[in-house]
Image (cartoon, rainbow, N blue to C red; front, side, top):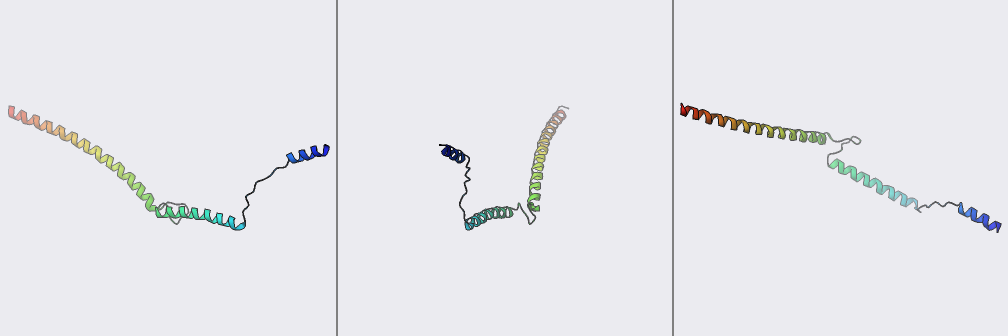
Length: 107
C-alpha cells in the first residue's frame, strides 16, 4: 500500500509537454510558405507604389501624390468660399445699380 501511494504521488508530478511531430521537411515547407506570404505582401506594396527599394520606405511619388491631393482639397474649398463671396457681392452691386437707376428716373 505504501509503494502504490508513492507511485501515485510521483505520477501526479509528471508534466507532459505536447509536441507536434514535424519532420525537418515539414518545418522547411512551413517556413517557406510563411516567407512566400511576406514576399507577396511586399510585392503588392511595390505595385501600389507604397514602397521603394529602401527598407520599409514609401515611394516619393506616393508621398507627393498624397500631399498634392490634400492641397487640391484645400484649394477647392477656398475657391468655393471665394465664389460664394463673389455671388453675394454681385447681388449687392445689382441692388445698388437698381437704386441708382430709380434715383435717376425720379430726378
